[in-house]
Image (cartoon, rainbow, N blue to C red; front, side):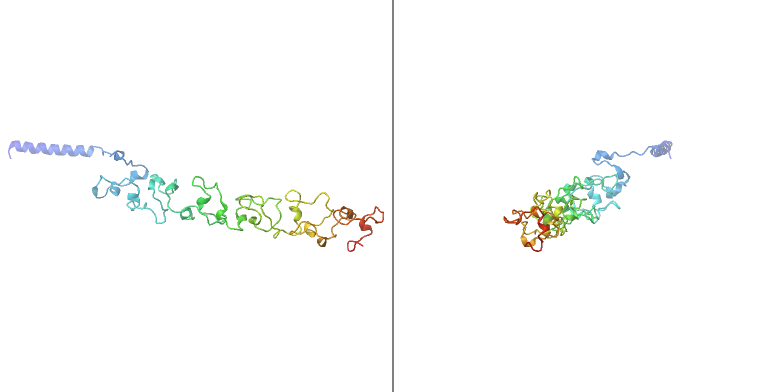
Length: 290
């Protein structure tokens, strides 16, 4: 070997050693992923490059979440079989910091009815105490606030008013309400709470005065016969006007006959009656006037 060739080989060996030393000592250069238009945030920073850049291809990798998560490329983060139907991209509801639970739901892109998600499995559903209805959640509830309800009675089931109108979900019977076993919609209607038509069918006997008290409904007039009897002892629900056959003196206060037997409300003293200041019942009996 010539001296020149030997010197050249030594020089090459020294350069190779020097390059190897510098290469080992050089710090690893971190790639600025934000320049690609897809910044790595949250859990994405710990994902291996080859999870998204497969087969060593770096350019043209999709930037949409579902291109990886929908196809299950990332272990443990693929969309579940019971996921709510939507045409939104993952990032509309999920975050890179935490995949589950969902931080916010964009209802504008949800496909299907509310109940398809609000079924107590995918999301909170109607509680066991919810009023009976066939209407969809959106009929009353809003996506902006779940608890404030704008209610429509259109799909409410007849006879089920008290499931909601119970003083908890909504206004129920007041403390001074007429005692009755009837459903609210027997007398009340959805267009107006004030009764449009009334049925006495479910009214408990002897409780007329709880409503017929001059406040809720017409009560005794100022010239009514003094009595402690219930209205239905003499009056009937089919006609408020008293009929002679329906009257009972059992509850009439003694000595007050003339308040009724005055020739106006009922037969009173005749023109040829014996002059007297005594009460009728001093001489007459309720079983026989003569």
